Length: 343
Image 1 (cartoon, helix red, strand yellow):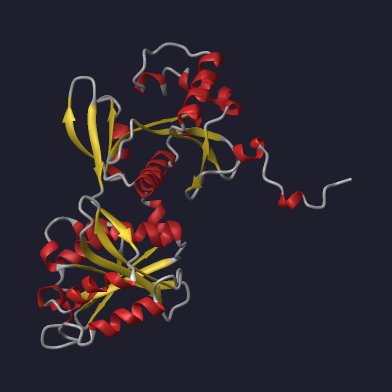
Image 2 (cartoon, helix red, strand yellow):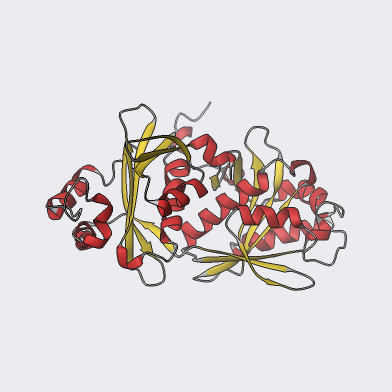
């Protein structure tokens, strides 16, 4: 007789193996497992498409060696995952964060040959680095690849990595994220008030709140944010941008449902003393990642004065497209599909 309480029972170890740790648009990231050993062997013993780009000794691997590798990684609780195609259940490859400490780690990735040239590398690297930085609090991820692997180098550059050293054997690259999304507590309101009452920060707002653009009752505005914005996702989202190194607040980001179904208006403000450090670009990327990857927002739009060239550049670099200009205001838009297509 079937157990009527089966739905309350804990999943078996075999069932747990099949539960993704996290996922991206097309990829499930699973714990490494002995059930993937045959897939691992096909990949790592492919000398033409995979093995020659790895950092090993270019030798053939056996099933016993792969099983031992899986068991070692699981025992170490290593930050390593097998990537599985959502639609088919096919094996895509492995991705790992090696030697992580409190601030950084080294990325390693390998894709099996039949899944290469389909955009999985870019999607995997972006999703994995975001997950690693969010869950481990890292501010820097490094990697090394071969100079004769320009395809991989282009993928890493597309994902935000930059080259910091080149040798005969390797190209060394890094991804640095100084900021993080921080949902503020009521006692953090001092920073909001400080920003909203700072003429240099709020100068862009002068046409609506002359003469300096400052918000007249910032304390009351902060109370409204706590009551109507915090914890209201995905209809409304508000957060500070916080620097990881010292915990300093440097700006804020937000989005909310507009009058158009499926479209959210967004905003980003960097506190004036913190400008000129690249925080606008980093903050916008964090906002887009949260909106599209976490909250599943369908479309973001923003508008501002045509004279704000720096704001226009960081938006278009992030993938926004201009929809129209009228009365000195430029209107920009980015859909979820467009966001993932370029990543």
